[in-house]
Image (cartoon, rainbow, N blue to C red; front, side):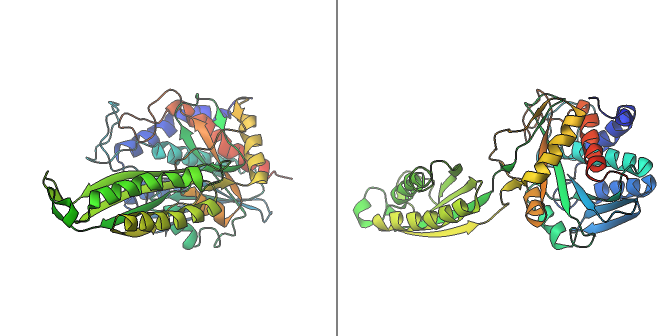
Length: 386
């Protein structure tokens, strides 16, 4: 079950695109160069329609064949991370403080490769909508594209995406039906007591003590309030006070952290309990707690039927497909597209490389033909001619 010959022949060309994107990383919605290159290539390939500026700086390409009214969307993310690169590759980032350390350069290049193949062959019956998205890394570009009509304007019925996965061998895919990636919420808690001299604590309200007990109490929420068969993470990642000396009891302390889970009901529960526990615990020590809770990306949940279609396409490319891979706690804003339309997200093996977001990470070019073949195979199977 080999990859498509066209992509084996195009691998050098697609790799060159990927290296160019890698050298010129752009962050969040500021992906003007990348989006321009993508739009120019889609026009050169012969897409029936190319629209820029969807979701601020997103690009949509449309390819039509036959007479079917079926419409399927394929998505790739274009943005990089605000970090320094230490990969040592000859095509390393030329932009200080920006690096393609998550492989979005590879995702964009692979979807472009699939676009070139699909425009040349048009061996399908229906409409393919290519979604090149900005700002996956914290900006919610997926939501912006949905809100800007990426699904409604072209009557998209299903949507699919993929992400490289370090640790999974090149030549393998991994997917599961249902929750695949977690939600990502953030919280800030300001604990206020009564500052004073550290040698006279009885005349103060020890904010550090109160905030410390808030941290301990918050860690009981997952173990004692969440159903044990559910999965959730609550992490207090930051503890700051306004004092940096040994003889001052600070007036305030700031706690910051994240909440991750796979179920929106669990999400609601944790938000409610986090506020109640923080306020009550601070009050027990004579302090107050002000909680700010910010909802981030929702869980990434694959639809059963579309997961089956994605599995079939992947199995046509390789016989190494994990169909029940464990869900993971990182988040992904493709989740907004899956909330808008049924679809599926799949992992593509990146081999034995550093994990995504590591400064030495680099996308594995050997995976390019498989990713391109998956996209093309999915379209030809879901919208067969005749």
